Picture (cartoon, helix red, strand yellow):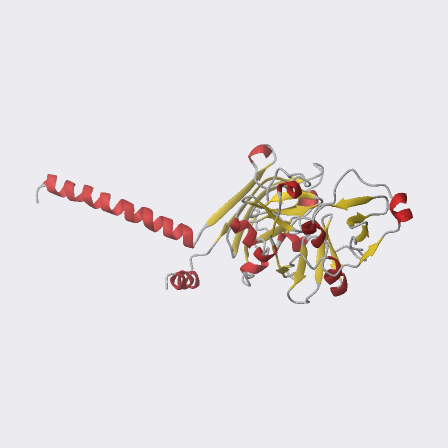
Length: 339
């Protein structure tokens, strides 16, 4: 065989092989994906990890991972301190973002009173009354709430707010082609149907509203995304204990069945698990560690990861890599998807 013919076959072979390799790479990347997050103290603008107080940070990758690698560079917070001889511990918790909100002990849920005067309905607070302008808004405050009539004296003694009463926090509304959730009296856009499903909201509870109703609530600039925690006003229901919780000012308040049915029955609770998986390990001599989440939580229980590192160290660089291991089990799971 002449050299030109051999060269032509090699070139043709490469031309055919290259797309096959690209296709294989794409399949492997989809089957065993990895996502990397990093923090650099000298280049915070390029960091996609935000360290909170006490060296705590949270990440919410798009997939359900079982293997996490951390690589850390740090120094003692006090320059005079010697490096600690104790092992540096790393703890990760996995679950829904909202389940990590602290439980407010003896927390009292905000309750409300609806009263009627001359065929109009008002939301009553300690200092004023707000007119409830539409039937849709009135219904958002619960179908079982007791509505009493006001006397003229009671009505006149309570100042009338210049603001109209809007939908109850936690209400899902649809205006034009966008869906929002009401939180702290403002409306937050839900980025996409995938975000809606990931946060486990209920499509049957979405209320179509009018333009005049939409105008009552200001738009918050940042929409809910896949990595968002549930906002204030969300009702959680723990699937193991059957208990209800309200997210209020970044804390969880336990609700009795009676309070839920009376005041929040129009809001479908997000089914979740308050019990989360937790794993602790220590850094090796290279200041790295690998966390294996053997008991991976189901997708319905969330994909948020909360990391805690020792407070006595000052982190200068941090790299977190999520990956799915190349294993026979994962290959079998892939095969099931194509059946």
